[in-house]
Length: 166
Figure 1 (cartoon, rainbow, N blue to C red):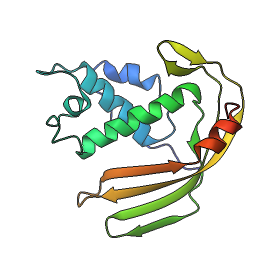
Figure 2 (cartoon, one colour):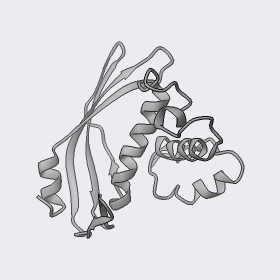
Figure 3 (cartoon, helix red, strand yellow):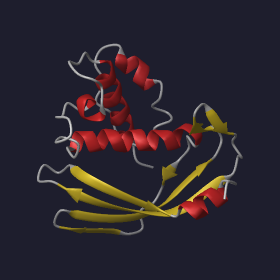
């Protein structure tokens, strides 16, 4: 097993709070995403705290900036980790890259062990069922070596069937 990579710390007392979640966050990107989100959320701003504002980008025109997309990706996955905190991808059997494009496949696995929020204060109670679904991601990279866009594909019908909701 590889050694866990250190995450750049959040400023001041935020690091102590963010570190409480490190055991739930599998990858460095997830731990970094939490720290970036907390820092942006709690920092003083001159305008409403939209995703573009939290990422320090211009409204509307900055919505495709890498920092905004990284924050959106973190928030999208945070919802999944809320009700399936052991979600992980242990292998990537296919990896393809050409120029600024990458495509990777994997098997996403986890267990539905916590209540799933469904909006308006409602929840679906956990079934305790495990899932293992095929997934693929296509990434578009920039010259700085960071991903500008990512498209994640998975079989939702199989996914919901496996966790007892299909």
